[in-house]
Length: 539
Image 1 (cartoon, rainbow, N blue to C red):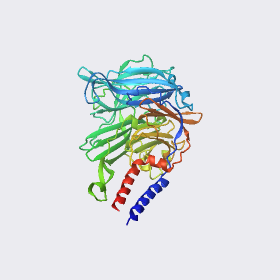
Image 2 (cartoon, helix red, strand yellow; image 1 turned 90 degrees about the vertical axis):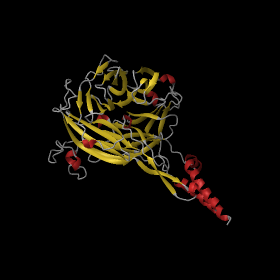
Image 3 (cartoon, rainbow, N blue to C red; image 1 turned 45 degrees about the vertical axis):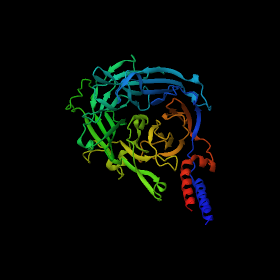
Image 4 (cartoon, helix red, strand yellow; image 1 turned 45 degrees about the horizontal axis):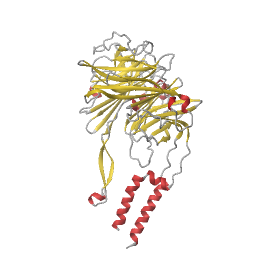
């Protein structure tokens, strides 16, 4: 019948129109204050890492290039010859970020330094807030004759001046350092291979004092707990680890959260451990290479969790009607990318009372500190996990401190998006605002109550805003600050452009008409149109 194709076409177009009517409205955007889209430098040489720091009335922007060839470069791993790391920093008054203008003046930026290192950079770490003096650190590597040397350059604000200085810390040994985390008084790091899960390098008390731009040998090292057989599954192919110091009110307690991921052929195995060490020695003559020298160090495991995750998922669905003439869905296995447990994928609030870490695809974990453990022992859900003086003895006294755990995942911006992967995150000092950016270059802004600590229950995150118009370059960093009880945010792109926002207010939402729906969902509509066309053609 000739009218049947027309009916099929009209039904298909009606379905498309109905989908446009029931589609969810987009999340609001924060009010954008400034943008310097025409004020970028090194636009042809996008930085590997961008760091934003608010201090002393200035916004500091640090761009880091991990390796730039200065001679013939040789090597395929992170250790190379003929390659150097480059660090550039500039700053501008923070007051220039409040003006509601579209383009910032070029002379508002002041170039501070351009540092070329003696080898390539492999890792970057931020000091936990509040960043009074210590700011961030980078690890670079050089080859001295036949021996590799691993050096951590720590940048800090010089006392009494708004200029960052540095010192190079020469780490002991030649074993590869897999990861490191800068703390206020120490450096946590893990070697590959090693007998211990991590080590602690205690920093000199006068590290930020003159003289600056000098090299120091690090020799005050403490060992972490020894690696046990059950810490590593069999037949692993890849491994990565994240380390962070958590808050403890006890001055003699050094609390460490370690987050391992091991990849086998079909599974990722995540292993999270919180351990306490008391009476850490500060004796610089302590021989860390003596495997039996553990008499003055006692590591107590307070919390532990492990769980698997499939390496291959079946999220990719392809309509195969045009391939074999049938009408069925074909499901492909998709390999989930190995998680990167780097400093970009975890963030901490002031004094590390809140920590957030992304661990696989769009999933992230949150830890919140509370000092109400004496009341939580009556909570059947939490009582079994409370910290004790001796966790091996269930009758041992309960410590008056505890960290809530929370497992979350991104609320994807588009209801048609199947997946996205977290590439970075930043929490404010109060632990109440969280920004997460992803592979699709979206910035999700979560918020929660103003008092997330010292509670009897954990507070959940709530998605409030999304920034979805960052088209010029990849997101490199986000930072927050507060002024006159208002919360502000700066997004730093990897081409050194920045944008500032007032995140307590949102822009007027745009009404989504049918034409806008067609433009935003063109990929989905193309597939729907082809399917409709096939049915009409068959009729």
